[in-house]
Image (cartoon, rainbow, N blue to C red):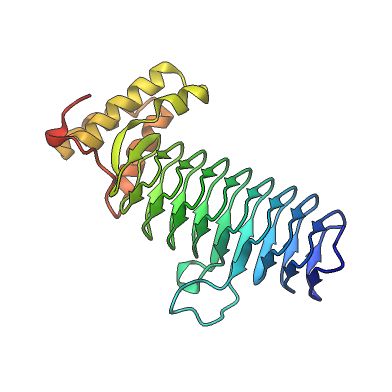
Length: 264
């Protein structure tokens, strides 16, 4: 199942049923799990681990050294989980020592063509990266987040679970969970109601998330808004996650474009 024109360097650990297409290169410190299929002209290098049943398409580069001027060939890593689909021309860099040394991709993600995920990023499970979405270094993306095509995310930003960005969105701050954002620079449009409904969130949970969104993202008086939001969050785990995300933000959050916190 390994094309004779592929190069598998000594030391690479590849499960017996892995397939590798022509002209692909697998480095000596690479580990690939069972059932994974590697297309043609793929470069996998560095200390890179790929889990089971992944599909890596042609001309993708995984585990190359980070685009960081301070990197000095340290043995950092890229760890990719199971059942990920990584399409053509995707680039995912390994980590840097100052960022913890690991770039990590979870399970069951769809990463479309020309996506770039930089060093020290943390991507959860069940995410979708549309074509040419790009993460700078040290970005974290929560489970079930969807990034529209050509989305750009500034370094050290966080994207919460179940968030959604529209095509061409540019984020330079943290995007709260369950939130839809659009524009350059991005503005928070509202709660991702349709996405949450499709995933079976109860209507009451969606309603309360929208209420907390108005308090914390659109509101003007942040101190009183936080107190009100914490009261709502006491019995709803999703709301508690939203509130905690805002409290832990170091870069600040993406806010609404509406003036004076006007309600929808």
